[in-house]
Image 1 (cartoon, helix red, strand yellow):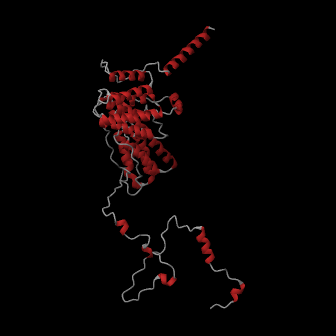
Image 2 (cartoon, rainbow, N blue to C red):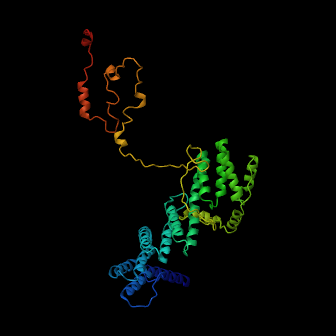
Image 3 (cartoon, rainbow, N blue to C red):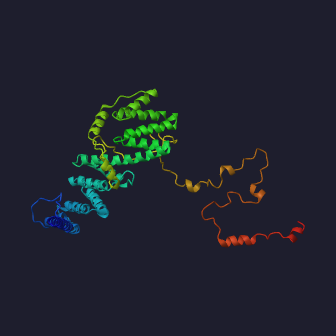
Amino acid sequence: MMLRSLIRYTGTLAALAVLLSSCGLRRHPYQNPITKDTQQPDKVLFDKAVNDLEHSKYEIARLTLQTLINTYDTSEYLAKAKLAIADSWYREGGAHGLAQAEAEYKDFILFYPQMEESAEAQEKVCDIHYKQMEKADRDQTHAQRAEDECRQLLVQFPNSKFAPEAQQKLRDIQEVEAEAEFRVGSLYRAKGSFPAAANRLQGAADQFPLYSRADDALWFAAEAYQRMGDRFENQQAADYSRIVKDYPLSDHADAAKQKLQAMNRPVPEADPVAYARMKYELENQQKPGAVSQALGVFKAHPDMRMAAKSGSPAMQGLRPTIPVSVPGGVAGAGINEVNAAVVSDTSALDKGPDARANPPAETAAAPAAGAAPAEPAAAQTNTPTLAQQPLPSNHNIAPKKQKKAKKSKQPPPPTAETAQQPQP
């Protein structure tokens, strides 16, 4: 009986705590308060809004802050009030709240780019998409957005205190993107589509060199090049050389050296910087256990414990590539360069002849010197020329009335009596 009473009492306290926190009685300290001790009306409004914000009364806090902005448009707390509105949406959470928070943070950065809080606002925008990232085998929209926003923080605020954290987030994000490319390449490899497999695996290793399985990607890409024929031997040897040089502690390093020796290619020396970085990664890598892997199926957020902890992340996003077997691609990169030019003569399309009206195949050959001109084909066959015929379109279908009229104009079929009559 005592045990039941204790369990019931504990459950009641837990339910009461949840109820109180949901009612806004639990306090969550605000990170950007104003410590200035004054009784100015705008400061009083700001303190009241912060108090409501700390007790999860987000709607009331936003109304108070909006009153401050509309009433005291020259207040020294104007920027802080605008940032607090964005923080209120961020704390409220949810798809709608995070979208509103991102818009408010972007406005704050636009109006106050020189303030220290602008770097924090950009970090929050990156964090909004970082928290909504999905696994490598799912939609990568939030991963790409998070990569863009974290890179923007490093470019716009390189000396900020949030830069190291944003750099690590960028490594985590690129780990997920590279894993997505690696899985697609592995699928093509299993199906025997070696040009597509080499394209995806090569792209993952080239664009994300800090990827934890970049050496595996290079090894499988070299294998795909080998299956594609002898004319891709240079790409195959380049991948083996990169494994030996940039990933000297890889499980494929010794096998890559043997492959290069068999191909009569030079074996490069291991890069000392790459050796030190890879050693540090192997010593500080947190591999997921069996239980974590089993429960990871039910998680929506990706597991990024295998992501790199050092090195500079790529400062350019994922670029789609084409297989090197396709003509027109850059040799060894598989990137197709497309150039556009501005047409100076804008009336060329209106003045020039229609290419469909006189195709080269239908143009008659010029008559020989002294020969009589040939009779036009239209006169010989009593049919309109190709230039006189209407151009094909999706609206050349005759209406039903026209079809009936055509049928009525057709001569009646011959009978036995008409067949016996003499022809003129």
